[in-house]
Image (cartoon, rainbow, N blue to C red; front, side, top):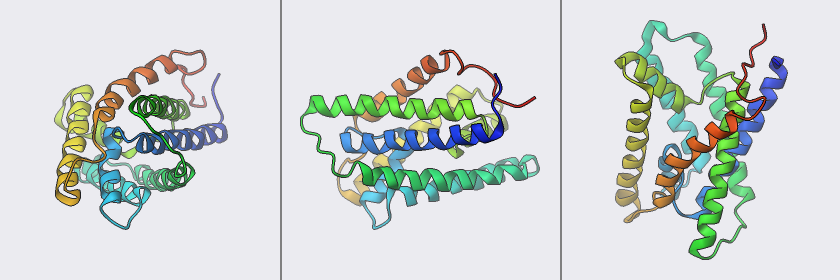
Length: 213
């Protein structure tokens, strides 16, 4: 059954909140956050600005790069990604505050919370896909690059995530003097989140089109 636009907006808002809760939870697990969140997290550790603020800055740059790559093909409505980025970034800071008092001790507990964060991130992504309004700026940029280069989306996605992780590693060593924000959980996130999303999208009601006719 198709969803009305208002319902899809609510789904998108819920997806953004749940996804950012998962991102915040992954930072508390301290085994490394998702590839696209690595750079904002490292920069937040190295500066007075919050993770949400750096997320906003980085994703706005993603939209600008989309515009530069697409030129005349860039549709005006795509600028509305910035509004979504603002909400997403605000939700990150809200959820970082909500989990700030959470104490996780022991490697096993770290992994339990890390895997739990993957579940929340995957549910959030699935709700965004169900809402079918706008892509996240990072995913949209991957799609644009694959379009411009006439390359397979999956390969560009792997390359993009690898660049994000490499950038975070370089920034971490340069600004913090060691490796923070990128660990075995980052690799696990890159593998597991997509797998969980695929399983969720196979559930009844998720794999259907949501556009009004």
